[in-house]
Length: 244
Image (cartoon, rainbow, N blue to C red; front, side, top):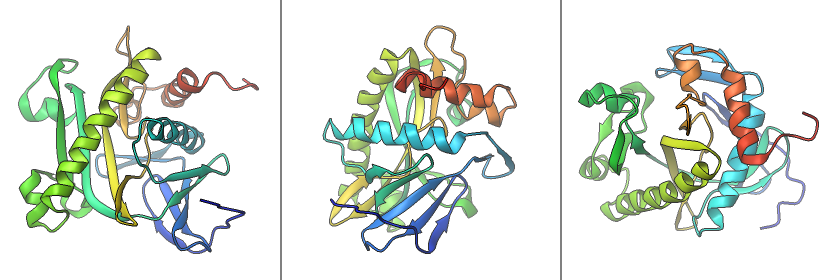
């Protein structure tokens, strides 16, 4: 797909971490990553220096990596430090969370000890609805709410399982434990593509040896060294920048 010199037109959407702009190409958008950070359904707000730059770089890298395994994503091209061109999606309002280690809401709901390795990965579905607090749901709920067909829900989960297997091994090779992560999807030209981003904002990543948290939990729970954690993930995956 030729992108030429696409320019940002009107702002289509501004979320907690990104802005989405229309372009002169009806099927392409520009996604701009912000330094803004939120937690607990936007009850906590702040900024993480250079988060937008790092998340743009990591997302571009991981989308390209997944594409080599046949995973279809919305990513087209990284065009600046904070911007990427993506295919325009009709967003499916289902978030798929893959869990490999007990953390976050899994610990709260079931009384599990944080850090417990799960015997099998667990896929969870959440209704993407801020007003309702993104509630947990099952396959049938997704169909009843007219979010997707049962076949589409099955495809989302199968894709999430495949991505989990790919990324879990990849992060392991970089000395990182993929604890859990969130995926979003959308429809484009009759296909379902992975959208949004893949970054320390959407993944829980722990150091393989020490279990040090290297993700947004450092912001959520005031653990300190937030910027350093994001940069650590970036450097492990991409190497230290030349001007470091």
